[in-house]
Image 1 (cartoon, rainbow, N blue to C red):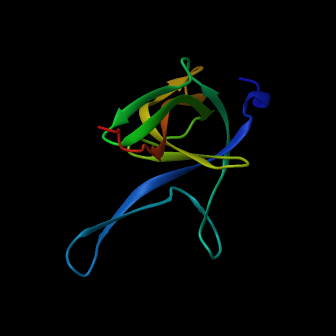
Image 2 (image 1 turned 45 degrees about the horizontal axis):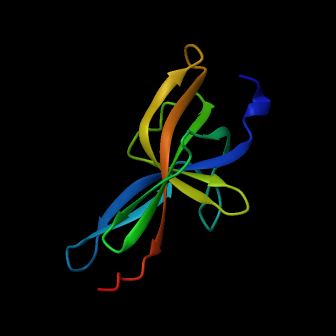
Length: 130
């Protein structure tokens, strides 16, 4: 793959759980690899980000409309990424994606990985008039 196809900067987040003082679970998403210094900033890598057709679907769950966007993200080969993680695609507005399938090795041994990811955006729908 030509490096010019790596058109976006991404960072990978892993789930970190702890307990609060009442014994409840606290979930945080922390960088898989952090840059040195304070505050903690995620390391960013070049990736190819491409929408999967159809690019949008919408479903209603209760009064909340969930917009789904499936996206293919390809990056250089790594062994420390799995399907429990999230990927943030950086740009004018950062978008966070959940990994739905993959990572799968593509392009030959230890060349690249590909993940199919899903982005959710939510908006509150007004209640239906009866």
